[in-house]
Length: 84
Figure 1 (cartoon, rainbow, N blue to C red):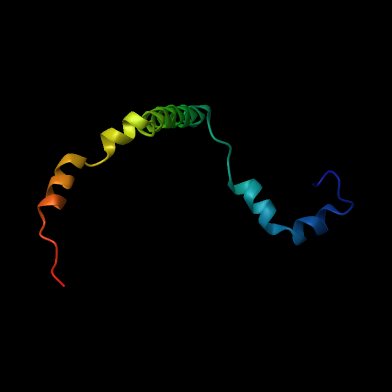
Figure 2 (figure 1 turned 180 degrees about the horizontal axis):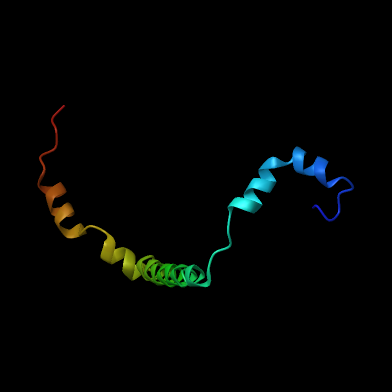
């Protein structure tokens, strides 16, 4: 911004937060930029979760995740109906 404004001093006085951000935030060293690899690992984990979810939400997957129906039906049939 200092290259394009007509009065640099006035711009510096009017925008102290921008100046502080530029001066007080150093660039990350190359060793810390390697932490971006961890973002990639999280993305790979997300892909695995999507695969698992696709398998779970197929008809066979829903049958596997649903409660067993045989025992519920037997339990319902054995109940004595309420008398009025």
